[in-house]
Length: 102
Image (cartoon, rainbow, N blue to C red; front, side, top):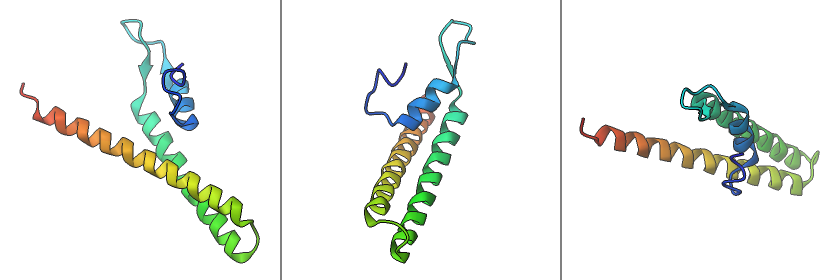
């Protein structure tokens, strides 16, 4: 559903978004559980960082190929950049909300 709107969105985030949508809104629209989405994205990022660290150590010890280590490191870097971008957007939105006059 959401992945068809934004094809550049990562598969982990779109998968979580699709799994957290529920038809329980009073207006009939979908309801998104933001905290589950954010915690799942953070867990996915931490998992990718741990896998890349293990792959790098394995490559240094000669137990894994260098290409696999580089692939995992680049994937972890991409996920970390995505998490930082989402964090920056949330902070920016919060800042704008606090500036609003009531």
